Image (cartoon, rainbow, N blue to C red):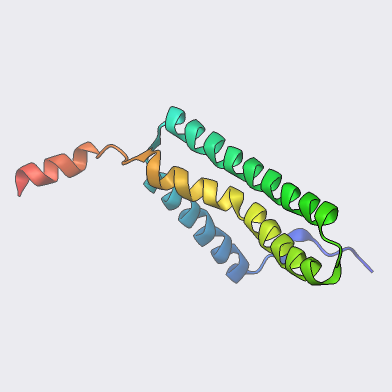
Length: 122
């Protein structure tokens, strides 16, 4: 049985889908604008400091529970819920970082000359 060539497995629909995805990616890159590196660094550092403080608070609460509570069953239910919330928060930190940088550290892209000439002609 001869091996199937790569060219025969590429369908026109797959090629069209790949082309459209590349065009969408370039359009997103064009709309990003100019990122202020200093502001982006400040946002990233402050977000990660907040996450570290949140984790230390969580560890402190668990340590306090282990040391001071004698009935272990009631508070551990809430500790499991609190753990799930902490894990969800930590998993969303990179996405929040990207969103905050897009919102506060990105300046609009400079307008192209063809837009200015169109405004002057109108």
